[in-house]
Image (cartoon, rainbow, N blue to C red; front, side):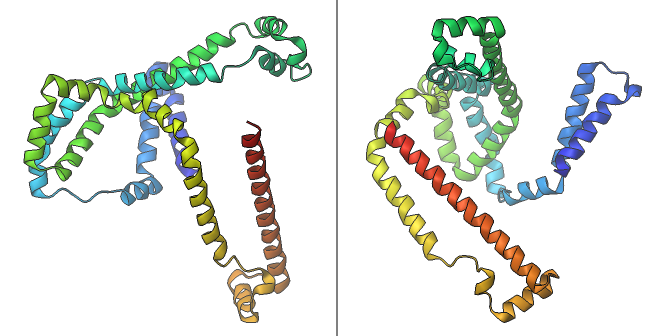
Length: 297
């Protein structure tokens, strides 16, 4: 939590300092910069980056970066990332919006605090109730969706230069000069340019993910088999010891390490066992409920 505390403190300082004499927008920008600096300078964030830090490029690979940059530039023209992700967002959200649209009866019940069952009111009466209590509901939902899409465009536009640079280094590390030359030649053709502009958007093409869902029945068997096999392996491994399973030597060592008395240690471990059992029971109930829902559907 310290990373957010530091960031919020920096944001509050930037916005609240009267001596800066900046307008609200400037203060917000300064606050966001301070927040970004607080996050990136946090030791935990640095450790996270370090864990994923790639091997440095060799001199030979560094020499390929300019050529790789040309290839990536052809693949991702200026502004392409925002346009592609905006199109992907629309392709994915529009069908889900049709499937998951709020019913007027459900919305009326929600707005009335569930004191009145919307099903008892009927769809037309519920629609009138909604119109009276929350006439701007649909406009808000549309505004929320648009705000998310605009945010995606802004984020991807801001990320585009860094992504282009990172991809150039990745391409330089994974392709030879001949391969990069051939790839660049392809993207310089009309077909290559068309592929570059459409390749990211194709990830959300309904033909692809609906096609995978069409084969879901055939996949259920292998999926469930893998899950059961994995569960059997997990269950075959030793579980955490209870207090009763500890040897006298282990109990003595634990009391020395923790500073707890034998009685306190026993109570603590018993409580931990109860919590673990409760979590397991809850998980089993959730799994049983999910299976029942799948069966009903």
